[in-house]
Image 1 (tube, protein in one colour):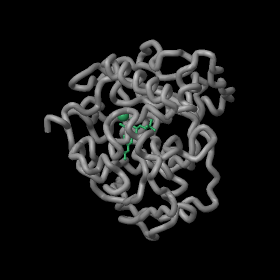
Image 2 (cartoon, rainbow, N blue to C red; image 1 turned 90 degrees about the vertical axis):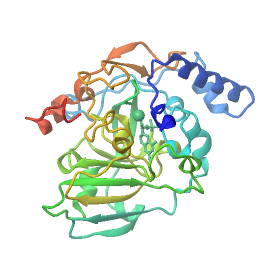
Image 3 (cartoon, helix red, strand yellow; image 1 turned 90 degrees about the horizontal axis):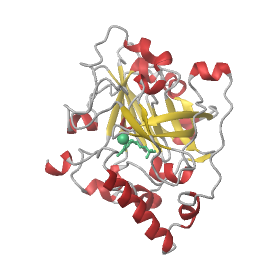
Amino acid sequence: MRLRESLHVPADDITDEAVYRDRRRVLAAIGLLPALGVAGCSEAAPPPSKVVVTPAQAKSGFRTAEEQTREADATSYNNFYEFGTAKDDPSNAAKTLRTSPWTVAVGGHCAKPGRLSLDDLLKGLRPEERVYRMRCVEGWSMVIPWLGVPLADVLKRFEPTSKAKYVAFTSLADPRQMPGVRADVLDWPYREGLRIDEAMHPLTLLVTGMYGKPVPQQNGAPLRLVVPWKYGFKGIKSIIAITFVERMPKTSWNLSQPSEYGFFSNVNPAVDHPRWSQKSERRIAGSASKLFAERIPTRPFNGYAEQVASLYAGMDLKKWF
Ligand SMILES: Nc1nc2c(c(=O)[nH]1)N[C@H]1C(S)=C(S)[C@@H](COP(=O)(O)O)O[C@H]1N2
Ligand SMILES: [Mo]
């Protein structure tokens, strides 16, 4: 329990950043991180390109024009506890995760359950690029160009019944491939869930790629969830099961610390984490030589209130945090 309470370190713990940066510098110096050494640390590297956003796209929330996080940072500063709890553990340890063949079991309250290969699951659906803000509960955030399909397009194929009030997701938990699963930091497998209307919302993305390439192992290959108005931990990685359920499913972080992590976990600057403020965040983006840019205010629903606030009409969001 002592160990678990130390998880999810707030981003303003400056030691965390210093340690991470130092480790990266050392690894780059001894040649273990050639690409990162250039793209992640050099001030001379060009800043990521800005995105031109049409009014319709702005209204949908599908593409923010905010400065993007460098690919090198988004693929090396990760939370994927199955590979360890340090930010650079996943990029160092996940390379060997076998992502093909990959099957996903879809079941529960639906007319057409099945165990499908990833290709069959996504057959006929074309990945779209979405540029989303991602706000980790720890108080840092990124802007990432994802490639994926709306989760709704996949779920509809299984014909959920009227009993499907929630959708539960399960990650792979293979101790032979995932050293972190041997540690007692969470109750494995990692589990997440959404209410069915959240799951069917057009912003909710089933991700297969980022930065125009297949999603790397450390970011949740070959299939992960991205729900941009919720804290990052709702975005479960390396999914092997999707289940339609009637009752609110158990989720890993809520099981681990129910007072700190609610089922909904919508980004909300008005509800502080018991151990730190959620009013602002440190953006990891752009060409700054430091990992974190200046602190910026955190917005309700991570800036997606226009698209999603109506899902929670009449709900007390302090109670249902
Ligand atoms: N299976 C699994 N999924 C996970 C996590 C994890 O530890 N295991 N960490 C979550 C957290 S806390 C965050 S912030 C995001 C991080 O995604 P990224 O590394 O692609 O930025 O993944 C989420 N999904
Ligand atoms: Mo997170």
